[in-house]
Amino acid sequence: MEETRPKLWTKDFIIISAANFFLYLIFYLLLVTIAVYAVDHYHASEAQAGLATGIFIIGTLIGRLVIGRIIESVGNRKTMLFGLIFFILTSLLYFIDLGVSFLLFTRLVHGLALGVASTATGTIVAQIIPAARKGEGIGYYSMSTTLATAIGPFIGIYMSQHTSYTAIFSFCLVLGIISFIIALFMKVPEVKAAAKKAAVKGGFKLSNYIEPKALPIALVTMIASIGYASVLSFINFFAIEIHLVDVASFFFIVYAVAILVSRPITGRLMDVKGANSVMYPTFLLFAAGLFLLSIAGSGTIFLLAAVLIGFGFGNIQSCSQAIAVKVTPLERMGLATSTYFIALDAGLGFGPYVIGYIIPLTGYRNLYLIMAIVALASTVLYYFMHGKRKETAAVGADAI
Image (cartoon, rainbow, N blue to C red; front, side, top):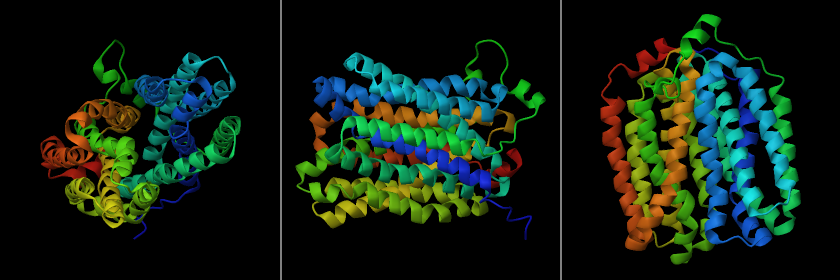
């Protein structure tokens, strides 16, 4: 029995999950406050305020793209600690008052630091989780990000109403230092030298920056994440339109609770039954949640949509990451993790810009109906990109 159920909740697993939680707590805390700060403090335009939010994700993409190529050569632990130190140092830039242009620069390099640090933590956790519990383990690990999506915005909004922005930036700095300190106490198994050498070959090749085996599921994730981007960016505007502002404040709390409840089940199911047993139902639940949003007229329907979207996209996110590392050789796991997050960030970061052109033509209700169709289309794309592979679970165990 011990061989079939190797230990998951080790000291190192808990430490890396905690470090990742603090990183994303800072990200989501600033996500809901930085645009208002840009307008209040620098009298920025709406376009500049929006850029102050979005340019962070551009920085994250750059960080992932660069570090994914070299992480196996540098070493996972060194990369993680460097990323965390970089993250702390760039947090100090928020205290420098040199105008909105410098704020945009700060957001860009802070995002770059998150890209480096979070790619390293994602790679490390994929290494330390036992192969037989990869789906379950990544599901638990990604709950650290899920908790941050609920707690971060709550703290950010509360602090913006009761404290100064200097206090907010100071709090984020302290959280970054805590993340670094706890990361010092974990041991990271390094890839063997031969594997490091094989991971990335010299010369400019796309395969040195993107893991081809992880690319199919990454593309599926990117398309699906556009649907969630419509929720993340425009749910408050929609709530105002349908007079459900008070209920909207609970949307992401309900979303997070749905994920926390379901991920232990879906992760274990994926390891036992294979990816398809989880992915197909979650795509359908995601589409159903978006459809409910499109017809929502009461708080009950509005929050039920949050539950279904949590069951749906919340599990698509973690299971897709598990697939990406399962189909990839150990020595290229860093690139696989980077490839997955690049696709996810691209969908979440650039999706709102595309959707912004759609809304004037469709309105919010029709937008979410369209996004439900996109979610269903993602199901078909998943089938051709990965789902028709019958040996998913067996390959996953062997590949790692």
